[in-house]
Length: 185
Image 1 (cartoon, rainbow, N blue to C red):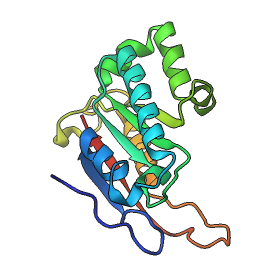
Image 2: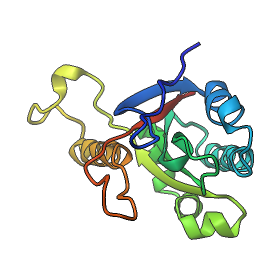
Image 3: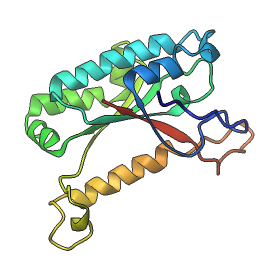
């Protein structure tokens, strides 16, 4: 069973990187762990996130994997929400982007205020995965699938965002980096 490395003492976050876990391992490590036994929010947020994920999957029918970040993936006993990025296969994403009802519902699911209004402490983003599957086609003019340059840009942007630490109240910690979890489905 994979496990997360210890949280760094200076930031109480994971060391930089992306750490793969199954859904069950996320619950075991970040909700049911002895370290979080006194949490008043972790189990509730995890349940709300399960409901949110089920809603995303009900609309799309497929989620490839999920990036989980923020205070939920830290040593903070009572995080305020779960920061998640759903990574959607390109063909599934494209099929639903053209349906205005699906697109509207997905837009709601990716809006923090809407989620909070529905009783879910989830800050979600929904990203399309690239259509380019062969490594040799990356960066080759005309070989990469149409639109993938923007897709790779967004994936890189969110990877960078999830590895950033927020500045502390005294202004320190702005250059700190942290890790996050990739939930394997």
